[in-house]
Image 1: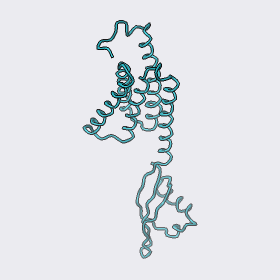
Image 2: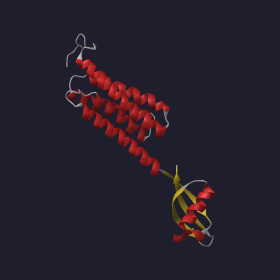
Image 3: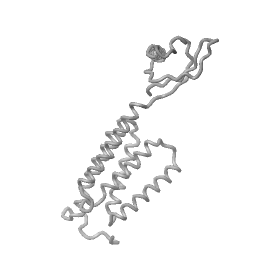
Image 4: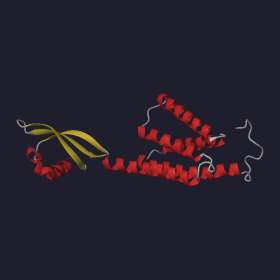
Length: 202
């Protein structure tokens, strides 16, 4: 890697600079799909859109200006280390937001690799795999994510296994929530009441 940028490096006739701009277009597209289409759809946190986009773009351009793929990877791990330190020194954020942060960096570093050394089709496939994986994981969370609450229940006759559907319907009507599962903790036959844990969609 040269100490100074060669003359005419930022010229549109320079194939290296043109390659960076093409990879930037790819990076911008997949960052938009990951952050705006997938992340924002499920998380609804507009403040993080600015953070993810800016970090992704800065990481891309810094890695693109480095001379070799080896240096790119070294710098990428350095960014991850700095990110981990900042995570410990700032306010707590969710593990899912941290995962998206690493995904943003990862996509930007992958897209910054030289196309001649790393085939364009391979970059598109890897980006697509990351994008589809994030989407499928979000769908999985939506489908199976639930909250738990403890309640005291008085209709002991509905606790029989054969009356499971009636029990779910009765508690759903009382709580106004779609009950997914019920766990019986204990039953007090003397006072005719049961202590249940109910699981419902968030």
